[in-house]
Image (cartoon, rainbow, N blue to C red):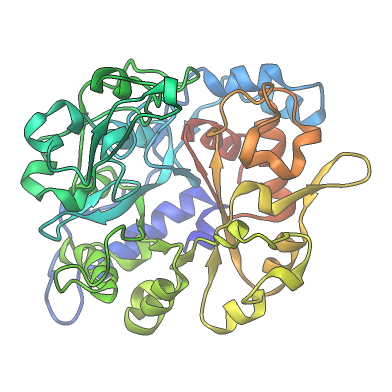
Length: 429
């Protein structure tokens, strides 16, 4: 459904409602009726995108695209499935908190992400990494929990070139202990000599204005929040930082439990896009959970291999055709893998993007507006294949336009979903 819904928002909403009602009234009477919370509203949802999209348009160089986008400044904006909330709205809100998720929903994300890991008692929670609690929560400020960290805080010794360190994992603590934590903006100060200074590491292009009471969530709680809001869901099964099986909990148990929580909540598989960087997880879902298989997303991390080249198919293993033959329907590489520059410095689709489409694969990409200031460093990691074409903040829209029109992606993760929501509405995707 995401394939069609990315282009016709109203039709998407109607189809989702019908699918959800059908999914909650199956023959086995497990769920005999859909509650009000389970209904995805059929009418378009008006949202507020705030001032940032217009600000970015104002930074663009003069072009037909800028003119078209500028004409939408006062247009009513609606929730759109092309816009995917990456960890919520992590540019300004602590990632994977209730507040971050709500900000993504309010700014028009039609799909919102919970990265899924597990606690010591094998309960599923929303965190980007199993071992990121030291940088994304206040765990180090709670002595009785800080002492349970895999690597307790160690201060910097700059004279001897030693940086401050700490590693605290969800698997170090129970779910009950996890729920006592508060989310903060992801970051740490490696030069810190105190816990307080270590925790004060937010990048200067983000903000700590909303960083003091971030509400951490279990995976099941995120499902209920998204279901109530009427948005679709994309859970990512994170790689375990502990040896698997963990206390008898295997990788397959982990992959299955994540989807079981959607079934238990009465959520139609048509509303869920399970994702993983581990291709074996995706293959497990294809083989064992056919209802979820069509929307399983392979987060392609082959970019991390030393010989990977998005312009050279000989460096891709498996090939695009092999992925398709294995039942993979959607691939999701980072932004830079999908684009390159032509002889005139225009942004164009990469060989990777063209091959994925030729193999019949749909494409989602990540992560817009996670690069900081584009005019400072030409966009950094996410723009590395098109650095020579990046020199102002409005270039985020230039890239987005190529991804939508020329590459044909069906959705874009963003740390500030309002920007993608604005584009999708303005271009009538």
